[in-house]
Image 1 (cartoon, rainbow, N blue to C red):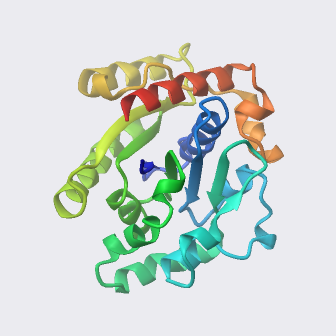
Image 2: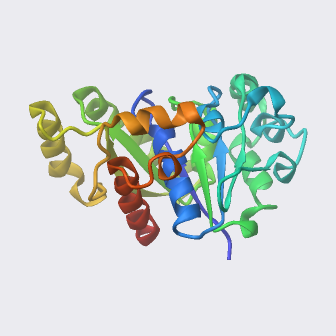
Length: 255
């Protein structure tokens, strides 16, 4: 059975997008006992370093795949974590954005590359860059679903309609089957009035899309990438790990 392909996307940076992608991928691979591939499509490469990889030692990246230099299978690296592999990214990927504009049928370009590995995994998670550029469009055009991590603040609310419009356009142009898996609230602090106002507003318009458990702002989640570990390894019984475990379980039920 072919893997479910899920992109983590939000054009606003600093909303916990990469953190959520890494931690949900690791959780499903470890506790869910599924074979998971994570594709780092963000030129910052934070998902790559968050899994303990040293970028200077990486020979092939998603950039090489996008420009047709190698098959995606050649760029896959098995991590030290159970059932979890990654196609890494480095700053080279920033150049791919321009090249994608120049490629004909660019939205189908990565689709061709994914075909060779879709049957090797249960889930493929794509960490998109914090923009709605061609890398994100390319990722969404080959995804079965999108998870939207969102910080509990009003700027994030403003960006939501823009992102949903992009999803609508992707459906019309490239990928009619793209579904919104859910909106994941991150950096949550229920004691703040602002947080509660944003949550109330979201429930008014997107109640059915919200994951039941939000991700709290915790020191352990913030420090885990510095150790090159997902939270389910860094602090397995802590609040953050338990919250990501609940979200991962709900995600698997949704798609």
